[in-house]
Image 1 (cartoon, rainbow, N blue to C red):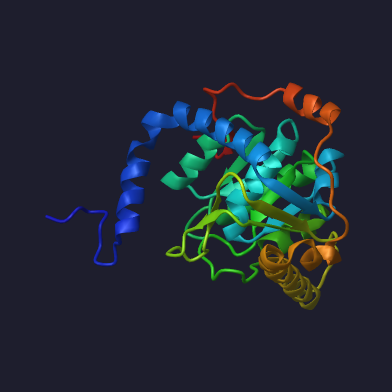
Image 2 (tube, rainbow, N blue to C red; image 1 turned 90 degrees about the horizontal axis):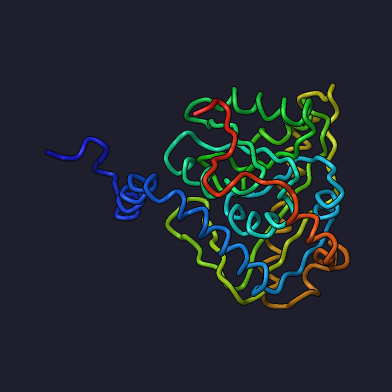
Length: 282
């Protein structure tokens, strides 16, 4: 008899992913330790070119909505994690097993996760993120092309959050020369490896009026999509032409100085055995 979770549309990639996620609960402590080591290696073995206002927002602890394509999720988080320890952030994650994996991988940092997606709980999760931004002053990470795509086509989540919270949207892009790209996934997710070059771009803040009309919201959504795609194209060109390809996003932003690094490292964080705060709990 066929496994109840399998279907005629199952693929080897899905089968492997299912086996891994079935066993991951046994390895959560190891996952957290490996995540810390990997971040340490990435921060010291990758040459990073950072441009745009996002890093100043984070270093100055100014809340914003950090909007990016799904394929940028892992490269962007690997870079920003060094800044966000001790900096209050929230993000939406699905309720599935892969969501559980991410929650535990990022447990050593101060993330709060609202669990939900298009397949269930999405509206409640967005409401929780809006509350986090409006009441608690937390920055919000959000994948603009949603949980199911299509890739690099903006949905409404970031625009709605900006209208409800009053926080600015900062469009962000992360890419590099030494990435494993999961070509068989719809989002073409990139997984960074040590060494090589990486570029991190962010654009000027987008403000969404609380009384914006549907026509204005659509204009803002299109503008956000175009900004993200311009940065995506420029980041690919960067790998060929170098810094000249991204001059439009300003001068390079220096990494943290020693004093800033000590402040971040000294910030309180959950112990290795902890899990991130989630909504709803579980």
